[in-house]
Length: 215
Image 1 (cartoon, rainbow, N blue to C red):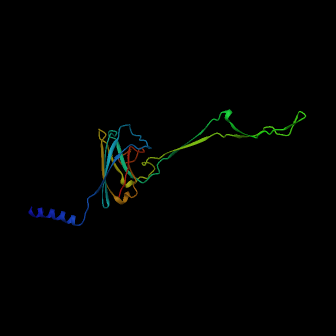
Image 2: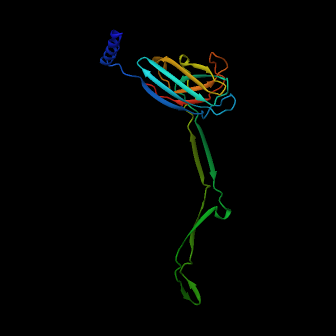
Image 3: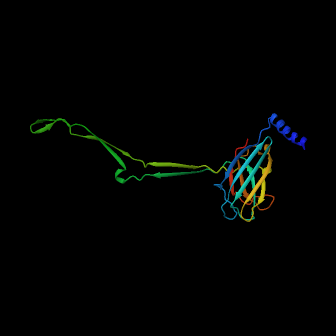
């Protein structure tokens, strides 16, 4: 017993001297995807993700509530997607009244006096002017509205990261698994989907999702 008491502290000191660091932890809040629709019954899914990383291994713990009772769900990491970008262009032409369809500019010249000879006026010039007319084109305004797509769409599933489980009668589900960190290279988001079987075959586009940043 005394030997065991001495061995345990010795192991701790040895690990500390080797510089073995604890796991790097990060937490995320799951939310409903903006551009994907679940085919599962409508409930109020919510949840969190805790990711712990040590050299070579990543542990993913997902805790969810508000799911369909006894329904099967699968979670996977995905590579970056293109998202869905929608651009709407609206053109509005201003209506120009008929009376304002053109503008007129007059530049008058000054009249000069003539001379009177025998009651007749000779010489001199009458007041005249030059007139120019310019048609006014209809005014056009173009407005472009761009809406960026959800980060949780368009990526490729990393199959080796799949975690699958069944919600309980209260719609609660916890998924926990260890995945080689090398397999998660390029992972950009974690998507939870309804599943049609315990093999984790997705039955919809997504129920809950979060962007992730892995080391």
